[in-house]
Length: 134
Image: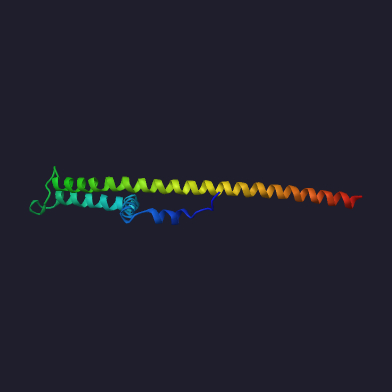
C-alpha cells in the first residue's frame, strides 16, 4: 500500500484558480452573514420604495421591477457558481474519504501486527513464568 497522502495538499495542487473562485463564492454565500446582507438589502429597498415620499421612490410598488431584475441577475450568476463550488467540494470530500480509508487500512494492519507481537510476548512470559515455577 502507498504512503498516506496529505489530502489538503493534493487538493490544493489540482484545483485551478477559477475553481478556487467558485469555492470562495460557495463558502461565502452559505453563511448567515450573506443571508443577512440579502435580507436587509431587500428590507431597506422595499421599505424605501414603499414608505418614502413618492418623488424619492425609484422602484415603485407593487411591481418593484428593478429589485426583481437585480435579484434575478444575482440568482442567475450565483446558481452555476454554487453548483460548480459544490461539485469541487464533493471531489475534495472523495479525496479525503479515500485518504481516510487508506489510513484506516494501515492502522488496522498495524494493530494486527501489535496483537501478534503482544501474543508472542505473552507466550514468552508464560514460558518464563513456567520455568521459574519449576
